[in-house]
Image (cartoon, rainbow, N blue to C red; front, side, top):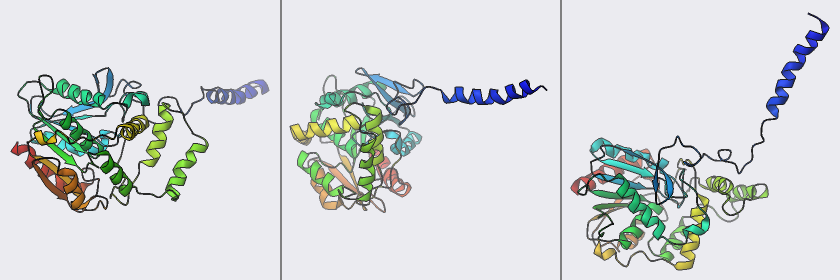
Length: 334
């Protein structure tokens, strides 16, 4: 081998390395770099399209069975932490999960689009009608945290259904913060798991020094919100697993609440079907008295305490083992 050929063989790997290093630079606000892609960006994800919004969604069980629609918390979280609810499919139910618009892996929209709850009511109606296969199919709603608040707001909007709105044959509510704006703010204040000077909050806000992000820069704002979504020693949360959080719907709905001071209780007296209301033993911000106060707006309600667990009642294995039989019995009774 000549001296020149030896030189050539030595240079080729270096040249290849330089070419590899010159790949397109990745930017933090580009799809998939900071947070998982949405269904708009990754067409392999299961999805449905409702009212012009592409939603991450999947269903389990016989399509013609009574349907349980599972509504996640947040606003802005996703249904990943509630997948224990798939177990209802093993007991004869159809179980439907979906990430609400702007949440989880569903399509993103501008913050200003969340200035009216009607868009979320229409979304629930659309998801129900998408999965219903026959008029006599029973429909149940199971909401956790914000999801339970959204379920209640929907029931309050349509307590008896109408020509185009499906009847709701049963409701399970798991620790909704409140249904009146002042109650919601009080609960949020009492359940905050960190102080303004805490090390955790300092770590989270440190991101602003190099990752500020503007309104509707979803990649950056969702990533930062994910940093804040962690365990909470007050509510007894252990840090649920989420695919991705939706910061703009969270901010948008909080602004909506501040501007309109909603009260989702005025028509609940018309919903006479028994409602199952679950609270937890280890959520220090809840307790029996708060559960009684929040649930009292329903005319026919059964309270159930999940023992040995906090707000993560449907995620934590002990909480699930406690809650699942009670919820299943409730659905079977209807």
